[in-house]
Each structure stands twice: as structure tokens, then as C-alpha cells.
Image 1 (cartoon, helix red, strand yellow):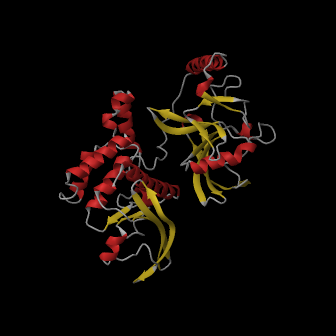
Image 2: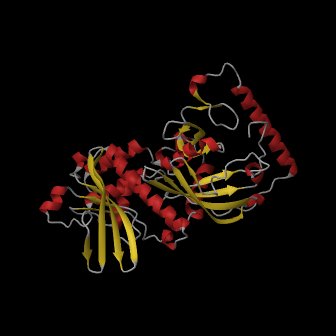
Image 3: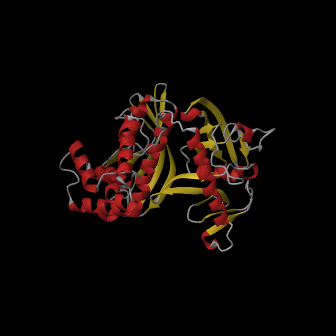
Length: 421
């Protein structure tokens, strides 16, 4: 079942004492053979803490005939009841569950696997040692912690009851714990819309995206993972509108340039980026600045909408900063990389000689990159795109990340104004 389900993560909620006194099989801890299925187990993490939880991690390899499948395991070895649950621990565990589901679904999507559209597959498996309640509570908390969750704690519990048993999660203390976690996460959108100043049109657009544009499997997962939407119909602008847009954009960029060159600017809000930048020294907001794991500042910022990070925007990296740049991509677990750069800019003979890092395999210090082209096509407005897949490995960190890339080689830079492009 674990293999056929394409299980992204197995979570076991059972204390070591429960397992020992109950004579329960330690199937996730020990290698063994079960009929035609053989299981090889390796322990990867021992006695870590997350809030009040203690946990171990394992990697299970399941083999049946020529088929093989690997499942990561988290064993919370001291799940003892409500007094053992706190928001810090719940956040760490539920974020891990959601990330594992996101990463595995993304991998299947990249492989064009039909499994990702199957409502009954790619589901994390959670079980305890004393009935459904523990598992059901963690399932509810996992839903609460999803970034785009739109359901209240009460609604989530009712949905779980309707799909399992009316007798589970019927204690007031369980609902109170879940509502407390909900307030900490702040993801229940219905109560937050006014503070985000979302108008009716925005709500309708969001709903249209949820119901019409995403594959069925991904709609059910709400926000995990986000995948490219179907191409929109071509949008055309008249020559007059294009010219007016260019004038407005140039005026905007000029005013920005004037403001940032003002000697009276409060530079305490900013940090200065001085090394390896295409346009000299860069002033950028501290609150959203992106740095490499070693603390090296990068010419990049996290873009926020309604108080939430939605993407990282950065300059095209220069050769000297490639190692730090890739370490940032690895640490960020980047789900997609979009490159907006013309072939003229990248051309090693006539352009700015920008590194072709997204389409050529190379070694950058401790970072090893394998690049593979996966396709090309057309977007709206006559734009072309080329697709690549990067396998990025960081030496000594046991970190390997797969990053899909979309390169738009003919993106029209209609907002360029001098050096601000």
C-alpha cells in the first residue's frame, strides 16, 4: 500500500513504551521480509526535538520483485497526549509533512506521471498506536498549516468526521488546541480578508484559479504544489497603448531613480550590496533581503503580497557569485526558476557574457550542477520558452535539489530606463 500510494512521508505517533508494552512490530525501525515484500531500513536522524516532541527519522526501501520504492519516516517517540503538544512542535512536524507532499508531487508532475492527478494517491500516511484520534488530530493540524488553507478548525474537524467516524476528535480540548494552532499560523483566509484588503474581484479571480485552472489532484491539495496554469489567450495591445505604457514606465523608473539618489534617504532601512553586482552598489530593503547560507548578501529580495512571501526576484547572477547563488537556491528548496534574459544578453561573443548556468552543467566551488533540456514552446503575446531541469548537489551538506527552469529568451523589456533594467 505504501509503495502503490506513492507515499511521500510516513509519520508514526507511538511512544517507545507503547510499542514495547503492546508488542507492536517495529517495522519502520528494522529491516525484514514480509511475504513477497522485503524492507531495508536505515536510521538517518536520532533523538531530535521539535517543541515538546522527540523524534527519530528513518529511510525505508520497499522491494517487491523488480519494483523498488523509498519512503522517509518520522517517528515521534513521545506523543503522549494534549500536554505533550505545543505550537512549535506542531509547526515543525506539519510543515515537514506538507513539504514532503509538495516535493514528491512536484517530482511526479515533472515526470508527467498520471499519479499526481489521482485523488487517492501521493497522500502522507499517519498512524498512531491507540486508535484514530492521534492521527486525525495531526491530519487536521497539517491542513491548518497549509499556506492557502481556507477552512476553519471547526470545518476541518467536521470534514474529517464526515469522511471517517463521528466519534473521533469529539473532545473540546482537541478543538481548543487546533484553534490555538490556527491563530498562531494565521492561515485561515476567511477571517483575514479584510486586513489583506482583498476586493470582490480578487476573491473571484482566486476562486476561478482554484476551481478551473489547476489539475484535480492539486486543487485538493490547495496550495501544494503550485504548477504552471494553462496558457491564456493571446493579449494584444494597440501601438498607441504600448507607446503610452512605455512613457508611463519610464516616468515611474525616473522618479524611483531620483528618490533613491536623494542624499536625505533614510539608509538605516537598507543594506548596501557591494560585491559582484551588474550595476554597481545596490540599496535594498533589509526586511526582504535574500542572503546566501554563509551570510553573503545577494542582489535579491523576497516579494511580498498581502504580507506573504510569494517569490524571490533577483538580478542575473555574475560568474563570481554563482556558488553563493546556487547555495541560496538549494537552501530555499526552490520549486521553479524563471529566467527572463534575451539570447543577445547571454551571447558569450556579442552580449554581456552572462553565465549560462541554467542550461549548462558545471561545478561552482562546492556546488555541482547537471543541466538537461526538457522542451520548448510558445506562450501568449508571441513569447517563446525553453525548459530545463537542474540537478543541484552541495558537497558535504548531503543536499540535492531538482529545480525546473523556464527560460523566456525574447521577453520584451518595455520598462527599461537607462541602467534600471
